[in-house]
Length: 326
Image (cartoon, rainbow, N blue to C red; front, top):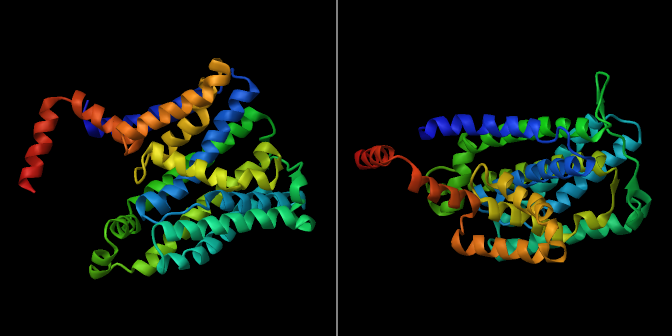
């Protein structure tokens, strides 16, 4: 089987698997799978900002919070979920655009501190502005949407609804990273000075990286609101931004499937280790550490190494001959 065939068949097989897995499962398993799809969307956004554009952000959970609260407030006021979803992504796009301005002046760990401060600011606003957010009591009772008479009230129905949003988000993400914008993001990550000398507007691309990545986070937050039907500030604290960062790094930063695999490790792996009872978190942490030591490029990097070892030698020689011609 050639590499091209694998690239075509793998997403189709994965999608078929995602359609079939929840059938016959209990509500908890379906909820965990839905959470994985939701966090995958948020991790796609951070992967665009961090993995492709090279801009460090520790604020992705705050954008999920902004999206979740906007959607909750609108749906509780009687508006359809789609209105909240569009408003959440639009608001996060605008706020992400503003947050990108510090990235024009500071880089690396200084930028990380700026985004960390923003995450803390959002958390404090959500906790203290009780008249709007409910404070520590949060908001409860957000309805799940229905479309043309089709309800998503049950967990399985809502899972397939989120799966559709996940596929749409993945398609948009794929289009972005393979568009001229995506190539500009990569150029910005590799060498900003060289990118600017080649005609890339690094100022605009930096702002777009933050804005688009933040919009993905807002879209994921809009899903979280009807999924759990209860939101409170603690769900969007710094620890959750670090969790999303872990998803991107473990899966493979700057790679298309990285955030999806990383989210699977962070969300699904602990559930598979529950049989170890009190030891599952220690085993989970040890596995992540071993992965990072032996494969700093994440699961995708590890898979690439294995594939290069087992792929037919004829393909290897073909790739080498193409490289020699270039």
